[in-house]
Length: 446
Image 1 (cartoon, rainbow, N blue to C red):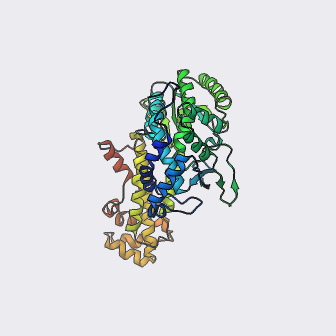
Image 2: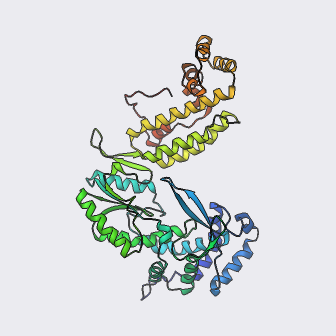
C-alpha cells in the first residue's frame, strides 16, 4: 500500500527498530570478520540487550551515526581484486534491519529477469533463463560489464530513487550516512566515500538491485530478452548486427542516465559459447542441435587449482582427513554446478580421475621408501612381481608412479569409494535421478 504521494507507509524508522533483534539473529548466522572496532559477533551478543536499546534510542532520535568500514581486497576469478567493505557488527545489525524493512517493498516490483540476491532466485535460475533464450534462437549475446559498479554508484541518484518510496526522512538520512561511511583501507589510511555502495554489508545487494532496476525497465521497454545477476547483464538477440546496435545504445543509456561506466575491454557482442556467464558457458554447436550448459574454462581452471591446493604432496595428516576436507568442498561445488548438461559429465569424470591420481601420489609420498610402497601395495592386492617391476625398473617420479598399473590396482577406484571420497560424476547422476551412459571416449586411468 502507498499513500497519495506514492510513499510506502511501512518504510519507517519504527519498523526498522522493531526488527533489530531479528536482524542480529541473521547477522550472527552469517558471522563474518570484525569491522574496524574489532568487535566480534560473540562480543556483541554478550551485551545484546544494551546494544539494541542504544541503537533504538539513536535511530528514533535521528542521532545514529555508522562507524567506519574496513576495506578488504579479495582476488577476482578473472584477475585483479574486488574490494569488500566490512562494517562493524552493530552497523551490520542496523543494515540488516533496514534491508528487512525495505525488501518486501521493492522485491515484488523487481523484474523477473533479475536473479541476483533475491528470494527464490539464484545463479542457476539465471542460467536456465539464458539457456531458454539461446534455445529459442536468440544466439547472440550482448555481454555488458559494468566497470567497478559497486564503487561507482551515484549517491545522489540512489537517494532520489529511494525518496520516491520512503517517506521517513530519518530512514533516508541513516541510509545516506551508511553510504558516506569512511573507509579504512588495507594500509590503514582512512578515506571519505563520495560514491559507491560498499560490498560486504547486508544492505548492499538490495541497493544494487534498486539502482539497476532502472536498467531492467529500459530493457523491458525495448522488448529485449535479458538476464541480470547483480552487475552481470547479458542481453540476447538474433544477429550480430542487432547486438552491436543494442550495445551502442545501452552504453549511452548506462553512462548518461545511470552515471555508471561500461568496461569496453570486457564487454562484447559474441556467440554465447564464446563467453562465460556466472561460471557457465552455453554451447549451441552440438551434434543434435540442443544447447548445452557447460562449465566455463575459468571454472575448470579454478577447481583444478583448488584441488591441487587441497592435495599437497607434503600433507602431514591421514589421507582420510584429506578426503573429508575434499568432500566438503566437492559437495558445495557440485551443489552450484549440478545444472550442467549430460554431455559435460565426462569432464566431471576427468576431474574425479585426476583427483584420485593426486591422492595416490599423496599415499606413495607418505610411504616414502620403495620397499614400503611395495609392501603396502601387496597388502592392497597387487601381485609382488607387478609391484617390484613398476617400482624398481627405471627411475620414476612419485607422479609417474601414481598412474602405474600397480598404484591403480592397489589404490583402486573402489578403494577411494570405500574411503568415502565424493564423486562428482556419480553424484551428478544421482541429482538427475538417472544413470549416465558412459560416452565412447578414451579417458586416462582414473
